Image (cartoon, rainbow, N blue to C red):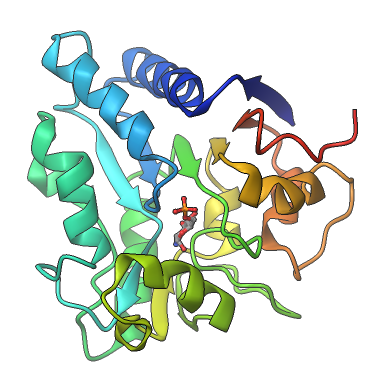
Length: 243
Ligand code: GLP
């Protein structure tokens, strides 16, 4: 695992954006795996600046988001569809037909999961997957459990995740109890992974990724199996890692 410790969130975001920009320059038709949550917002902001300055072209890229709440309508401000358009897509020259996010407003979630996996496969797989880290060690919405799913699937959310994500909702009861998420195998199949971790509240769980122990109780520890992963953290997030 390649570990980069930055002084602060802004530096972390700039560093991550440079890696993504490099990927797009090497392969203008790159397939990017994208994440939601507050962590990558700064990175998306940096990418928007590069696009506006004419330094980065998104016209040929394809994107696949990790997850979406179930059930939620796309235009709901709490949906990840809304989030991605607000924080990235509506500010860059991406082709709207190249954006993929699981549809959280379908009757048959299983069908949607199979459709999503097929689309990733048809796109030739993900070149660079951006990830954040859940407070309980989840990746996407792969929650701690005795067993994890390999492919895209419908999952119940844990109480910890519902509580953590309630900050984006008016009321905790409004937080959806389910989500559609790419599975750990889908994520680990990406050619490169970029994991972003920020803030002292993630320090203890972040340290678990560097202990050489792999457990489904902390899904992020499975990332140690990937041959090309870069973890970019700020100092606060890295504060519990044994030196
Ligand atoms: C959500 C997303 C995850 C994300 C996590 C952390 O649960 N499904 O993909 O990594 O939140 O969010 P934050 O970056 O806001 O801490």
